[in-house]
Image (cartoon, rainbow, N blue to C red; front, side):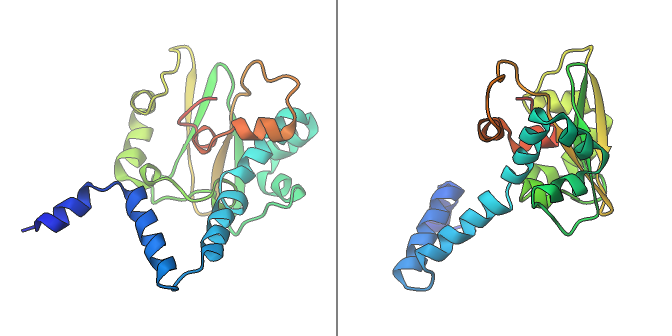
Length: 196
């Protein structure tokens, strides 16, 4: 049996609850605002998908780097000072006629060092099972309706080998610099559940 107070709490969006908790912790002197900012910065700047976006943007601009990234993702990432504890980082390139998508069918192996924290749906049993059985249908349900003549290739990450997608570069981006290109890249495009 839930009380009226508990019911009200469930209706509050998680972001608002988190903000209220943050304010309370700061008011009580338990957590310093600078510490919270540092943690958020670490996960968005240093751990989050921005590192992967830098790899993608560099590959779009530098054909030599792109070849190295596709041949050995971990070594190419190290060239930009990006490292991680996981084993091999395999980068697969999408094109107009080939769309790559990543899943981990066993658990939720994910290239944290370049994509940051995995989204909740990536770890769900439904995503893990359906992406292998019916990738085109699941992608459509997630908002990506690919043309019928586009081949879909599903890559299964493991603890030894984690995958990242090098998404197709958006049209009309000629002349953009690396920072501007990186700003266009999303985590979902590097997992392969969206296109830019």
